[in-house]
Image (cartoon, rainbow, N blue to C red):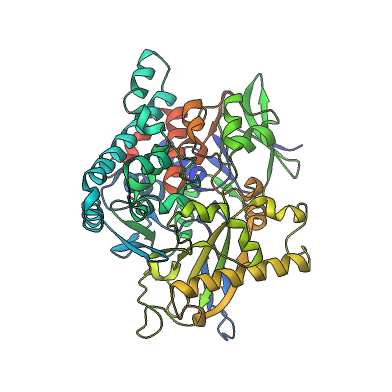
Length: 527
């Protein structure tokens, strides 16, 4: 087998975590990196795809869809997360604020608009639920307390262990690791208020009854100062990173599947790809998650403490991609839509977890809950006249087990019929909450967990990897360091969920391998 060893580092997987490591090693350390990606596009869940507009004579008239970056918090100028993103992209990505009320929650008999700004949201909740003002104020303080515990816990996990590790984790631990559903039931009486503080649990994928307080708190605080979307679409991140890598002499190799991490004397020294080639480097970074890194690439069991995290039912979704004939912002088209997110649900109990229990009724055409977003309306750089929308709904991966082992576009008539039923159910739900929406639909295409698994290699289509349950925080295993010298995790399993979590995972991986002080400088201004 051919061996290539003139790289300073090899990164497996080009999602946000992998791109972060590749970019920072290139720009901050002058490293020549090799970034390997199974898919034909760079970026993981930040890549986009296009579909021709029906009936268009111009070949450039194509709808553009994001696949994973739907909105990101803390991207205002000067925020540490924004500073880090600017460091990774060389400041080449412009982040546009979403509408002032970036989330709209719609349940039977209950509507809520979530405004930008912690104090504004606090005031909105107190105005809506004045009898529970004391508990609301306490909640906002508890969220900040749990966030502080999370930061200390990460420090304790990543730095050398000692007596101070326990001291870092102790303050606030009981609150942070306590059950979020129990917290809501104990502190709040009104079901509408409980809903207002929990509707967004889809952002991390663990229902409130199984979720630690800290998991929900991280998401809550992340969006207190509003939500943002990259101008020009999410693929601008990959475009910027590509330039940085190639300027340093690095290589991005697409359509290249890594089959094995090579070790010598217990240390990671390279990788072997599906086409039989080997590549060697002194540092290996895996962006495909803890489970697949161990079981697939190292071909060994995961560390014992990690197994329970992956026993939690996988959070996976179907996504209905829609091209619209005209913008819903036009007067008289539908109710006023400005590009905000819509959280739609038909559960009268105002309990979003009931929709989780009933999620597989979607297979019969009944959609109980969905997340609706408008990528083109969030993007001031989108092409005029090519308006897009996306509807996401939760399903069980086991519902698709009859098609295990089948290949894309060859799954048979039953699969096509199933997708048609789910599409119909999602359109009915959207129309119910936004009258007139369905008449705007010009193009539609449904992706299932099988689609996710095919393109991303996320097992069973589980989009978030290791579940952020209590055992994850207690195990100490969800960090960049592995028990194999020279091998580091760099995606969401190294830190937290979503784009910001994967970004942080990449920064931590660089810090663990190259030094914490230079890595953490990316969070400062003008980094």
